[in-house]
Length: 410
Image 1 (spheres, rainbow, N blue to C red):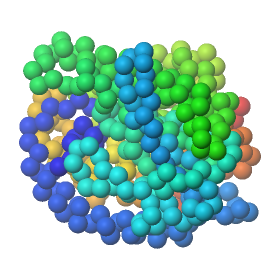
Image 2: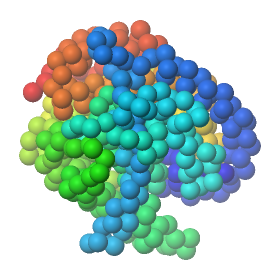
Image 3: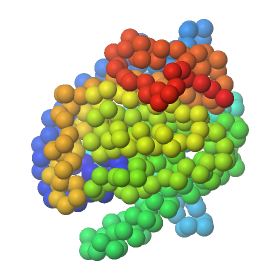
């Protein structure tokens, strides 16, 4: 049975019944193997080679390795499981997309085993790489968007994600008998841990946590990506973390007027410098609506752009989009979140998970290539007709201009 706290971000949940989810997932799991096989075939047919025209939507030329480390924060007495994706050595070519050799992992909530397009503990390709930190949604986990993390690594990035403090620290866990005042205090404590978690991870990685892997991280090329509460984290971190040079926020929290039951994390945007920022958001996001995205975008004090995925909801930035969306839609809620499933559209009325993944992984990569790597081709791609490029791949978007008619770079 899926644990909802590991499914959907930016929300605090008060659940009454879960039987509907069990029945729904029984059917979804029967479809999983067919989906995995189709995804592998697509990946094998769309790997970029040296000399190919710039195309951020296809998988990069490097095989991807993945390993898990455990980083101990002695100051806060916490042990963080961290996932690190990296360009793997040539000997692993094809192994990251083949079912018999790619990584299989299980999540702690008793879900079916999941696959990711990476080779567990594969040999690293020697080199110096930019670093991208991924921040997961509220009460989710570090592997919630492997479709994105593995894609970025296949294009020459080291990507790192930890399970945030609300996952690993017992004192931040929800108590069955907590009163409203205790809940408020606990959520404030959770919000206060997010940016320190990111700073700790950067300290750990840039001080040599990847030693022995033949991989060197470039401390002058660091970016951050996050979804939902992780998107809030990505937008909050530049205020105090000067090492971050680029931000991509996927459907971020932080609106000044959150809906009932939504985590009340706000943003001050006291940035001291220009950190190029890309918002990727969903047109039909029930939890974090477009009005909040427009507000955050307008307040962002940096070079900024926003692209809206048409016919998409909050779960479209995660692995297993269809399953995650329908799991939430079939939940029965009490209290402040009773409105949520009733307002959600059936997944059949929204764009597919694969369309959403093309959108998120391609534009996230392009923004990082343009900012962290300074790639002319990426900058030209974003300065061109992004809507038409995505339409050619079956993805419908709105490029939000807000007074800008072209992408610009500093």
